[in-house]
Image (cartoon, rainbow, N blue to C red; front, side, top):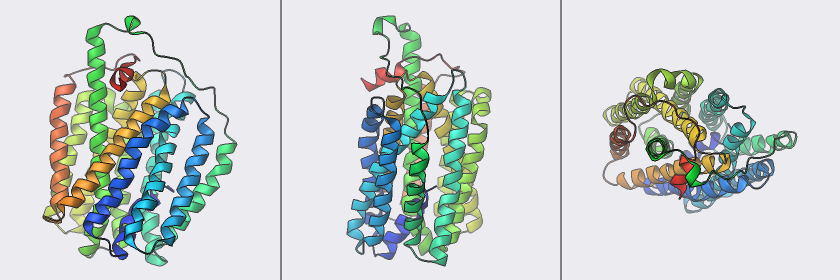
Length: 379
């Protein structure tokens, strides 16, 4: 929750400091670009160094970044604090996901991921709501202090956790891998997962960065904006709680197509209304779409991506960072045309992803045994 509290706070803070829509988009893009570049590196490093020590460093960076935000009085300096915050996030999340895989017995990964996704999903529900309430009742600085205190409180907990020895085994030589047909299918599924993850973060970054300021100009109060993000997080979390049942029933292809298709409809609704009730429907739909794309894609990568979990989660989080970079940057640039253009952009990206998913994932494809398809993509 300490990470999600600042998602709502930063764009509202930037707006109050006088930032333009373009600068707000740049602030979000700086975070996404930093995340995209560093997450893959940090994930791979965590396969060789202590994950717990690196997680402690990540929380420390997040604390410093939150305190730095409160010291800034001109909007042009906000990208600096966002860079530091994104570095901490890029270090933390690949490690958290790799630890889930490290600690999970064979055959129970989906159940463990359900618990992990529920945990951070609940945080994403509470975070924006807490931020909105704190801003409304106190001041714009209080959410940053709250987040910093929460990160500091987690440090002693990290020190008490014992972890197993990390799996640093090399993938099997190419000559010992599966035959070409299954390997090619596995690679296509990996691409589908990464494309779906990019859409998840593209639309999520666009909405988190640009919608709060857009909604504020329409007259919505911070607690109302926070409630919308709360509903999106709630819908996402409900999907997380059922994801290990949804994919086996629908199949990989239908699960991904359902997620991207819902995104198209949910984002197209935003430019045509200023009704809070319709925003509730839109954000609920976005939550369902996000939950499907995230849970199904991450599970696929960890199941079939080989033994180095840090490499797999680093590539996943780096992919998410690419979307978090592109969404706010392109969306912020398009606001010079019209303030509703970013939402048409998100819908178009969702439609394009749907077309790619149709090409990459065959009808009725089943779950595959673990391979090193992710290693092939990395090369």
